[in-house]
Image 1: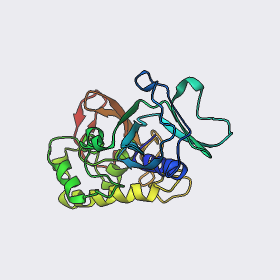
Image 2 (image 1 turned 90 degrees about the vertical axis):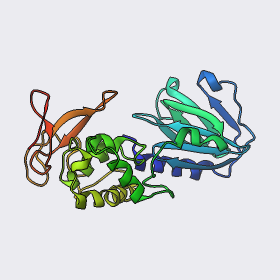
Image 3 (image 1 turned 90 degrees about the horizontal axis):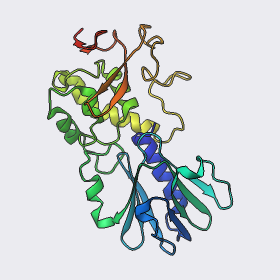
Image 4 (image 1 turned 60 degrees about the horizontal axis):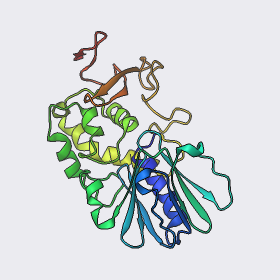
Length: 273
């Protein structure tokens, strides 16, 4: 599941393959850009901004893409067969002499002026893996709506950029609170630790092929995806329920013993423990 660490890895892989290289071919398989040809232009760099990818190209252009749930960029050596999915799922091809980047299932693909990048990423909060990281601002953003459930606030990229559903669940476990706890009810000491904890998790995983938060070999995550298996700390069955703001519900995992706060009751309403 692409989150900030996955997108950072993708940006680094694309940058290593294409930065400084002149494109010999481009192919955009979306109607809006079907006639665009970037051949002859040099790729300047590729960076991530939260969950967004920005490929900057000579001539003041930026290719903006977003992976969402199952998008992917794959890099192939020249002449190697592409293997990221069926051909009808390809949305973009950027080919240099030695490497070709192929974008599969990209739900967001937009070519814009580099000077206008703020239109697509200017709304984001501090980037956990970016040079603009500001823990004080990230915490202030989270606390600005004290009644909002913590899980929803963490997923709001306007507060801080890079956290997805996996890190949401793992962070709430490490903080010892449920994702349904109102942000304003988070104890001050734990709230103060949240920005550094979140940054530490993403930084620890940005160079790993498999995401891990536990430090235990073979047991990579504390709660995400573990229901109804036992909690790694107390051995109580991990629970799962949907959480969302009405626009999209996400499976949310928690331990009913290790995490304090409201949680969905069997009849669907929240109850406090």
